[in-house]
Length: 275
Image 1: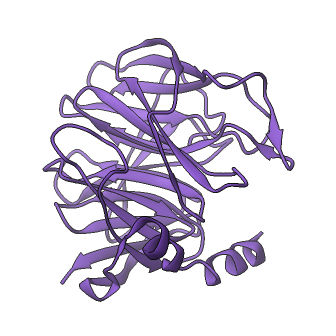
Image 2 (image 1 turned 30 degrees about the horizontal axis):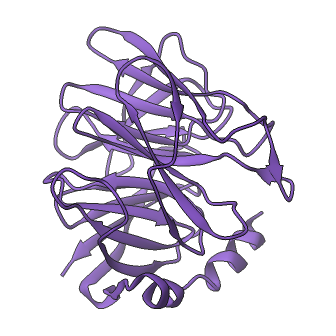
């Protein structure tokens, strides 16, 4: 598995994105630093969100882990464990948080046993309450697979203005990443793609800046930045692309409007700093 990721990321570049989608070359504008290790309990970190105080962060494990969120500081110390009631970790892939203290846990991975139904758990720690946002894809006929890979798979989500925005992982042979939107309100929904963009890499995490003007997609090998015009989330304003080859990258969080935190499933913590 590690050999596959090594080969995948070594050959992952931004050149196709510069050419096809007019992304700018911005690597020289960012400094990438390894700043720590995750607590041992977060052995397969797959999502990131802000914690209960500045300098604290929340993560969770990938498929088959406990239904729990882990709060840590950048020294790698485990601060707290937040068990999520009435939830099961089938394939937790990303995490986001709204301004009212609700966490949204994306149980929508589809890498293992094919699934036809997907969930986002809305968890409020103060109330110790968990509600479910369920969905399927409008184009989904069954738990179909493409070249033995899932036809409908997602590993990334962020919250913005009472909606959740999801991005397909991109197993499609034509390399199109699809964008979906679902209300951040418990219920059952059918999702239709709002937009798509050709990206020759698999998307594993997403986040939006605190000012709502930039969103980022993390892939195995690079970070892509998009501008937000008005309140519309779409692919109409590609800003920049830079390589980020740091093993199995799975989680990304904006620290401010320019800097980002990234973790991988090997337990490493990286800071991306705008110079």
